[in-house]
Every structure is written in structure tokens, then in C-alpha cells.
Image (cartoon, rainbow, N blue to C red; front, side, top):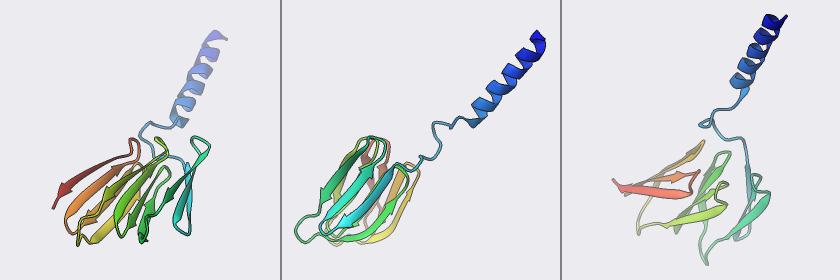
Length: 133
């Protein structure tokens, strides 16, 4: 009887361990967003809050990309990342004459390729990194 209980316990623990998500697994959807006039409003499910970004005077949104936990906006003036983990907007200015070539978002990463730079947005830390082409 003790051996069968021990075997049953081991099997249950193995099933629970297999069902637990890995720390590097893609994030569950924790971000919803929409645009209202000159405002971008995000619903951050992780912290049960909403955050707002106001666009500048003549700033317009050209493209967007999002995953379950981050959002990247491309405007005619800036690249703007939002992370549910930091609940913050992080902008990077565009350079004069810089053209957007590629915008992608997957899991924790935002990728922006322009005519002059390669930029990455880290959805966990809300940090941008960039390099020249």
C-alpha cells in the first residue's frame, strides 16, 4: 500500500511539473489597447490598471505591433514601447529622414528596422537598445 501511494504521488508531481509554464514561455495576454483621437489607452491586466499616452501636436501613428505583454507604436516622430511589467511608456526619437522598413513584436521582444538603425524593445524591462546599420 505504501509503495502504490508513493508511486501515485510521484506520478501526480510529474504531471504538475509538466503542466507548469516555463519562465521563458510566451506571455499570456495581459495587454489590450485602443486609440481615441490623440490618445493611446492600454489596459494592463497584470496590474489591473489603465495607462494613457498622449500624442504630440502633429504626431500620427504609422504602424503598431503588439504581443501579449508589450506594444510598440511607430509614429511620424517617435518609436514608443509599452511594457505591462513596468507599466510605462518608453519613447525613442526618430532621426530626420529615417524610414521604417520592418516592425515586429513577439513574446517579450519588439523589433524595429529603419533605413538607419536596428532597434529592440525589451518587453520585460521596457528598455530600448539600438545600433546603426
